[in-house]
Figure (cartoon, each protein chain N blue to C red):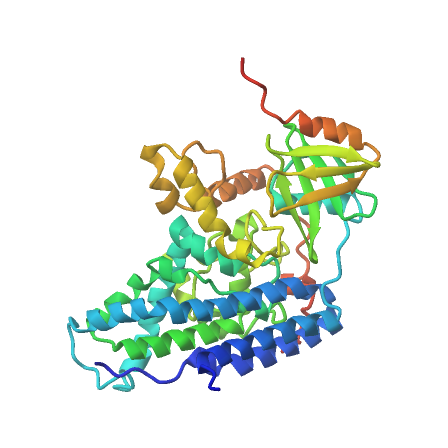
Length: 325
Length: 138
């Protein structure tokens, strides 16, 4: 039996999460009350709690797969989950690369999207949105992107810690209160600006900036889009829920996917599971690629907007230049 | 009596969540928005469906909802949702009726709910929505 860390990075960070949310709420009160919506906040936080419960119920299976795979590791450099020290930065970087691909599949494959859509279904972008985590992640196979790391020889416990740090890092970037970080930081790291783009539904920004911690992956794999001062970001999903019903928010895409699967002709059924969200065999709905293509076509037929004078974050409801929490 | 630590943790987390949501209410965050004019409504419609080319629109008297018709006769309904707006393109599943001068529009999605609008041209919109029904086959 291999030894695993007896602590959870994310659970240790919970007091920090709560304090930061309170701070942002007070700040929002002073700057613009519409940055938060109590019902939306309640749903987002309930998502976080439910996600923890779901992880406790179903996460053991994934852990068992990792522990089983570790028995077949190619290299045997591990001293336990805590070391060797040199393995930590390598593990963290490779785990972030695995996160990038898992996250990218989360947006490009409907089966994965059915779970990940939960994180995007708020029309708000604040620190409570960061905790809007899925309940059904264990029913996708996103973990397979980390499996090669286990097979190389990285201890499953080390991966759990790295994954926890990765998740905690991503908390602070869910805010409109910070405009841009220093240039060098923006170049390498995922930041509020980069991640606002990821949560945007503007055609320009769809399916961009999948990074967890390091934005370099998007730059390497051609999915990077900088935040433009030309248009205000709008958040959420293409077809906004229009409801604060928690269970509907959790399961709506699963229900939609299964419903499509049942109704589709046999030869198209798999497409509704493995193709991108919005794909239909009869072209009756839009995928993100179709929306972007239509937008690009419209752009080429119109003159550029004059509304480019000041940064997006300056127009955001709670952001003011030079102020950050 | 011993309480399972996981259950205790769940309970404390739930209490913290309710307190945070309560704090958001206490701070009076989340004021309801309003569709102030046609320009604003056009912008919101473009958020619902990028490139929706509006031919005609009607805003409910108190600014909490609107109906819009595109050049290709598609109809969009917009409603407030918290501090934001949400909308739907109406399909043949949609229905509408006028009662006491209020137009009630049901887009066919239970969770989206019925949208109520006070419009001068409510009857015209109700007829337009009825016309979305697929023609009956012989």
